[in-house]
Image 1 (cartoon, helix red, strand yellow):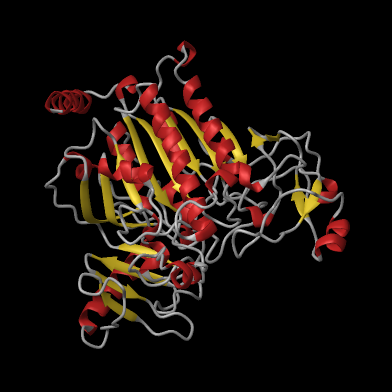
Image 2 (cartoon, rainbow, N blue to C red; image 1 turned 60 degrees about the vertical axis):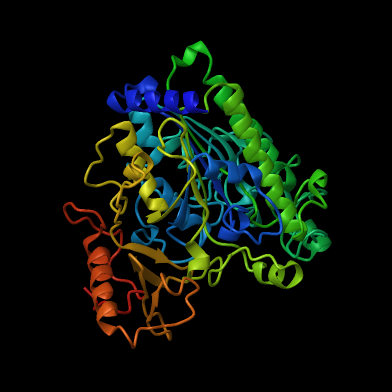
Length: 509
């Protein structure tokens, strides 16, 4: 053990001293969907199932106990992760996108993939996109699937794409590789009953028209390919991810480091664990689905071990938001708290909506692995962090809300103070957190709320009347961050729109 630790330490310092492209870490982001903080067993001692592979990431790296998605639903959190910029600065002020539409990431906007590709990385995305795609044809009746899909991952810095356009309830469901569906989504379906959960299934038989689907299932159909089945997503995505990484080991890739973005579809609805996971854990079908997700994380880790890539591969594991509303029923039925001790879940501005699992493993790059960190970090910070690690200088018009936490990986005793972090709910409500104070801003008929997260992490006691001066100071800070177009230092940037109604505390400009 001593010799192994000494060897990793020596390698770490060699990499830190000089970082040509071939010595930079491979980077892998595993992004789960609607997984709550309490759905990782090492973070929740009372969890009703065990997640040994997720726990391994924490044991061999750092578990950030105060890590946050930038929003509380899919699309905006993915935008924040990939761009280092808050999504409410775009045209999207609330909710999520469907499968089809202009990509939320504007042309020319730097992403994790484009930044790393400029640094000599091979880049790939495998999984769920949910940031908009331009399909060939304006409606299902006029599609020409022989034409390429535009305004999609391959236009945002990724060299390779395999996956699905959005959440499964939005349709256009097929196995897309590159710009084409392997088998075009020319059939139709709708949600079907799910005997393992309270949600739905997307599985054959499918119909030939929306009208036929309406006759069979009572609602208009959405586009689906004949070979698409919801419970195959995790297996197919993991298979493709491993295949792509395996190809990087061949001589034709010249030893380039790789960046793989792997956004899984679990445990988002439909909750559809494969039969071999039925009966595992003590939290019903949902627990089974998380266990299947953990199994596929283990497959990735096994591949890295066997390929001797593990030591210099930096893995970030996190989720796009807190747990879906069925978390309440799991508390009653199984005593499992997907949101752990935190208030609320998906869509909520409270901690349960955006405090998520945030695990980082990098054997040669993290000093004293196995640490727990209380530092406030956000997914918007990933871009600046990786840019620092690979030696990329960010331009002033990129990653405007991203602050590097790389020093926390290298220095166990580092004192890290993040600039105020902003969170945003599905309905458009804002919150700002600065150290242990969190101010939730007024919204429509709701008044402002202030919480001391050190003494009240469950946000049970609104103390705004006791500390009005704190609320005033935080309101001034969030106003500055919103209006200036950035959180970080630099010239003022601009939001993509002018004033909007959710900024109720700010006078119109």
